[in-house]
Amino acid sequence: MDQTTAERQAYYDKLRPNNLAPLWEVLHDLVAPTPNSSLQPAIWNYDAVRPTLMESGALITAKEAERRVLILENPALPGESRITTSLYAGLQLVLPGEVAPAHRHSQSALRFILEGSKGYTAVDGERTYMRRGDFIITPTWTWHDHGNEGDDPVVWLDGLDIPLVQSLDTSFAERYGADAHPVSRPPGDALARYGSGMLPEGYQSVRPVSPVFNYPYGRTRDALETMRRSEEWDPHHGLKMRYVNPVTGGPAMPTIGTAMQLLPKGFETAPYRSSDAVVYCVVEGGGRTRIGEQVFDWSPSDIFVVPSWTHVSHETDGDAVLFSFSDRPVQEALGLWREDRQGNLEP
Ligand code: GTQ
Image (cartoon, rainbow, N blue to C red; front, side, top):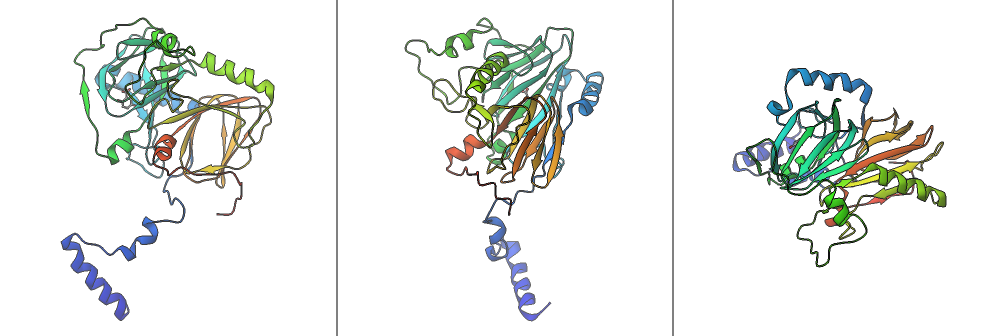
């Protein structure tokens, strides 16, 4: 240690007991020229994870677990229950006849359905039945319980803003005290009322969340299939549609943005990056995605994550459909969101 280093170290040692620290030692990490995320790109192969998930079904009931979920942890952040810096993801299993009891919390959740046809989620008094490819929301502080009335396991991908809420220290949660919250409206009511290109006379939205809480895959897929005929492909995204709150045109929930994109057979997207780390779930088709320097092959139900400000490009074998979610609405609301369509692969 030279004289200067020793003097400075002695000075820093005096600071610590007083809860002080020198900015100049950390400034360039704190105020980085580009996001210096510690996230790693990663993929979860559904066929490989599924048997392990099913094993949990014999180990604990949905009721005892409250939510029987395997958390998808970013490999760079083991034990932190997060797939990106701000978002949590997990695979939830509900076996035939099981219920996951009613509760509510400040964290917002999305469900993206992978398996089963008779699973349901009830949100604030309305049940919605869930099928593969359906996108369902449980907005902040809404009562929700899940169940399975069918003969096959029900599995979905959960996406929650748990780490974001954690970093703001705003977690509140309570149990309803019974398995199910009372049902007061017939299934499909919200979609008919708010998702038919009309709104009830005099309707005023009271919260920044979509009154539609199930966006069925049939409608999404039909929309993409009809639009593909116009052949207007975005070089970076193919044909990409964002899920919106029909009242505002904004995202379905304020903290998590979601999209579905169609990439036709043989399509290669141009390199793209954005400041939001993105979680993808393959709905249909096969292909591969380059994330930074790594290439990940994927097939239906695989889940992969792209870190912030990392180049991503997709290539498909057949027609492919990808669901994705990120914290983009938060970044946009705060004026932080950026994208780079230059495709310049220099760092
Ligand atoms: O279904 O309410 O994956 O509260 C994590 C926390 C799911 C849920 C999760 C939750 C839920």
